[in-house]
Each structure stands twice: as C-alpha cells, then as structure tokens.
Image (cartoon, rainbow, N blue to C red; front, side, top):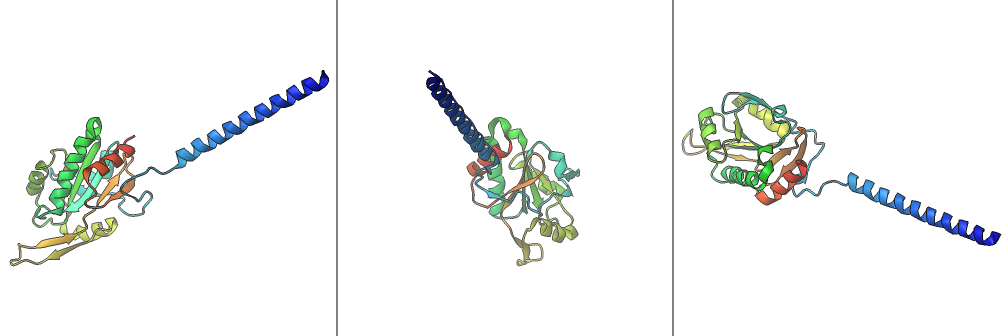
Length: 207
C-alpha cells in the first residue's frame, strides 16, 4: 500500500513539473513575440539620430513643429511644386493612403517641405496641397535654411539650370520619412513602394 501511494505521489509530481515546464515555455514564447520587431514593408530606421523634427512655417503662415501632431502618424516628403512626376505622384499616393486607413484617416498628417522656396510661395503651396487633400500641409523654409535642414534629414537636392533663370528644375531625394504618434522617427519609405504598403505600415504604428 505504501508503495502505491509513493508511486502515485511521484506521478503527481511529474505531472506538476510537466505543467510548469509547459507554462514556462508558453511564457517564453509570448515574451519573444512581444519583443519581436513589427514586420514593416518600409525601411525600419527606429532610433536613427537624424530626421528628428522641424520648426517651419506652413502655407497658412503658422509655425509648425513635429510636436503639433502628437497622436498622429506623420509622413514627411521633400519636393517642389513644379516637379514633373515624383512629387505629384507621391502626394497623390498619400491621398490614397489616407482613404485606405478608413476610420483612422484623420490620424495621418502628410507634410510637404518645399526645396524651392524661391518659387513656392505660401499661396502656391496652399493651392498645391488643395489638389491632393485639404488636410495636407506644406512647409516653407527660407532658402538659407535649406542646407542645414537637408543635412538634418539626409536629403539630397541640386538645382539644375534651365533655358532661363526661372526655368530650372531640382534633382532631389524621392523617399519619405514616417514618424509615429509619439513623434519618433520610425520608417523611410522608398519612392514607388505604393500606397497599400504604406497604409499597412501606418496601421501598425497606429495600433
């Protein structure tokens, strides 16, 4: 009889140890999942020491800072209104992204920073944003601010002379930066990635 109880006790201990082992394994798995990085489609630059923010006037004359948009995902693109293809395509895609976000559409703030303040006056920028979405904002740095601003965001731009002094174009970087609702730099979106991919990434950031 004694041996029976001894064996029964041993079996119960084994069962308890097995259960504890399973619980530890499940906890470790869940912990691993919580530490896993999100599967972004854009380039994850979380923790980067560049593209940290801005303080520039918008097309309505208001001084804007990244902190103004806390609670929203902010997409920043550098371009100019007379750009023939990359800039209008990017802004049109951002308008599509906003639609794809559905109920979270108002949590997206698109920011267009002009690299051509000589021609892109406030009225021009306001009209340009109106072509895509009235909630989109254009920021206009002074010409003297551009070199430092471009360096801070690692943006390339170069003036290409045309037939007349005012008929010039700009070669420039074509990607966009994405900040999360806490104002932290998170993603670099390559030109041509498409609105669906960006919308998916923004949904992750807005969770």
